Amino acid sequence: MAFPCSLFRLVGGLAFGGKLVSGAAFGPVVPAPVYVYGANMAKNDNSVNIENAKAAEGERYHHGDLRSALVEEGLKRLQQGPAEALSLREVARSVGVSATAVYRHFPDKQALLHALADVAGDRMASAFETAMAAAKPGKDAFDAMGRAYVHFALKNPFLFKLMMSPEMMSGIAAEGRPRTRGMAMLTSALSELSGGKMSSEVQNIRRLQAWSIVHGLAMLMLDGLVPADEKLIDDVLASKIV
Image 1 (cartoon, rainbow, N blue to C red):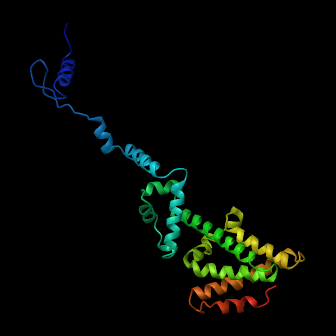
Image 2 (image 1 turned 60 degrees about the vertical axis):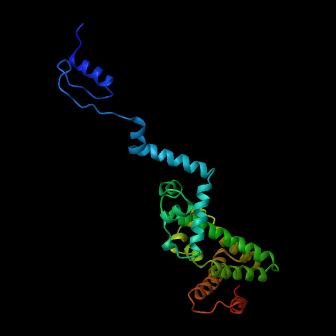
Image 3 (image 1 turned 90 degrees about the vertical axis):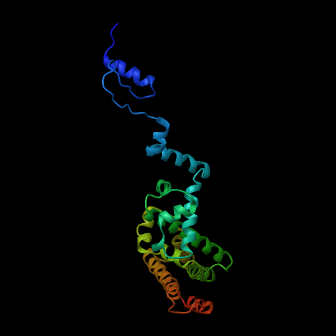
């Protein structure tokens, strides 16, 4: 039975380890590529490398732990410097994962900053609750809230400035983000002080007045324009707001 010359070349190539030998019966020498599947995939195929990275990260972080670790690292960095200096790549490096892993939880730096601002808002609201619980109901509790506002700003200057930046404050009420809890507490405290007799318009003005005082005082102290003095805080808050 006669075999086509091309078939002889194929059989010859397989028989000699993937190389074709010369000979009249086999035709001219044609180099045959030798593929080592596993080596080529590990070296050249990014999808394999990504899957390996996913597996490695999966061993270290489970059930959303990576997101929490990224947020905690971001908070740590905001204790040392402003949000403008925050880098997603540096956060990833500190946590011990690739930048690609970060993007699965935070597609960009702005998304991480919003998460950090949410934590800040929640912590500030908790500080309000603690301060008000230790004070007498009414004006004392309201003043305690204002004092807690200034204290939080002084203890967390970069986190506070991030939370109160226009980029972070824009649209938070409509989005229902955790940062709205503190403002809701302020509104509730004002309502209690007035015995529920304020119109919504007057209440909004009073809330803005109270916020302006504590926020203005906090920023003046953070910028070094007035001393961060406890007595000064008390004196300012002792003035009649409502």
